[in-house]
Image (cartoon, rainbow, N blue to C red; front, side, top):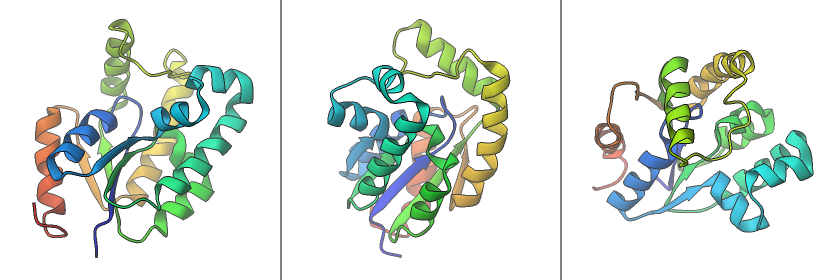
Length: 179
C-alpha cells in the first residue's frame, strides 16, 4: 500500500486531535481536525451549525467535508466521532485508497471522564451528547463496532499517554513509509 493519509477514529475523548497533531508534526504531514475545518470553512462554531442546520443538516455537511478530506494527500485526519454512523461515510472510508485507519479505543467511562475534564478546563469542543449519558453510551456501543470494523489497527488509549500512542502508530505505519 502507498500510504497517503492516516485517519484516526474513535469516540469523543479518545485523543484523535491530540495524537493527530503529534503524528503530523512527527512525520511532516498536515493535520486536519474535521470539526475545526468545518468551523473554518463555514465561519460558524459547531454549536451554531447544530442550531442552524439541526443534527441531520450538520451531519450532511460533515459527510461532504469528510469525503473531500479523504482526497487530500499527506494528511492526518481526525474526523468527529459520529462520522462513522453514516453508511455513506463508511463506504467512502472503505474505498479510500492509500488510507490507513486507526481506531483509538478506550472504555466509555474513561472517555466521558476525559471529556468532562476538558469541558471544565474550557478546552473542549462542542459535544452535544456529553451530558446525556444513556444516549452517549448507546452511541458508543454501536460506534465501537463500526470503528473496529473499518480500522486496520486498534490502539488501546485508556492508560497510554499521547506520546505512547504516537509511538505505537509510528511502529505500525513504519512499513508503509520511512520514518
